[in-house]
Length: 224
Image (cartoon, rainbow, N blue to C red):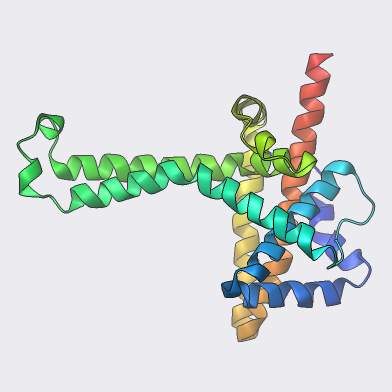
């Protein structure tokens, strides 16, 4: 993976400043939903361009309809993958209440409600970590052909995840670091965080593309 390029390429692109400004405005007005969809569609396009090896990695703010479509689809993908931990959190809050009416049931006879609460909570936390580690492969699978079916190709995604676990950890740690850098925009100038956040997420999705590309090449090489 060319990690160094990920931190530099945005500032080497044509009209990079204007693109960052527009991206920051998309985040600022993301509560209107449509800008949010455009924003995520833009990020997916960054990943796709990395995978396809295109020279211009930072897209123009055109083909808005296509970006809205991709943004909607990738958010659906993410939400579907997050259903299990959300259910676990709901169940954990349910047992946290420790309703007396459920203490006598066999299903909780061996564990008190507090034990079940922590079991569900820890399980959800572990799932979130594993999801964050697998996200580059999920995003990459979708971005390559813009196919929802590819985004749910569990066996292929699991194989990539298993064979590139170390690199996935590196990308996750870099994502955390980039989130910290993005927060500096708030410290320097309150509204500046939307622009630094846009840059940080573009770099993250670039890294997703790099990791997916590496995993794909490694998989194809092993199949020869």
